[in-house]
Amino acid sequence: MDIKPIKTDADYRAALEEIETLMMAAPDSSEGEKLDVLVTLVEAYEAKHYPLDLPDPVEAIKFEMERQRSDCQRSRADDRQEQSRL
Image (cartoon, rainbow, N blue to C red; front, side):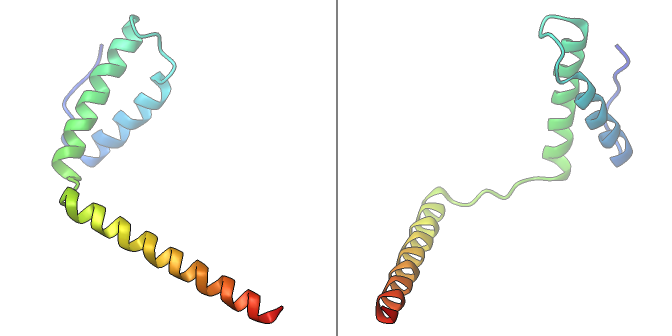
């Protein structure tokens, strides 16, 4: 297995390309083991270089509820316009 740490963006892209070629590897094969290791390395690189700022769970729920309410209000307004045309 020729695996090394992912230190640069070029290393990252090369690892992603290699992962793509190994996606159909059998889990218990040497290719499957290589895939597992590469995915772990890529996940670590992404966590360090592309961190996700996850929202507060309560704020995320409030945001989604407000979005759905706005969508519903817009839909009702569209229905009223359609009814007035008839």
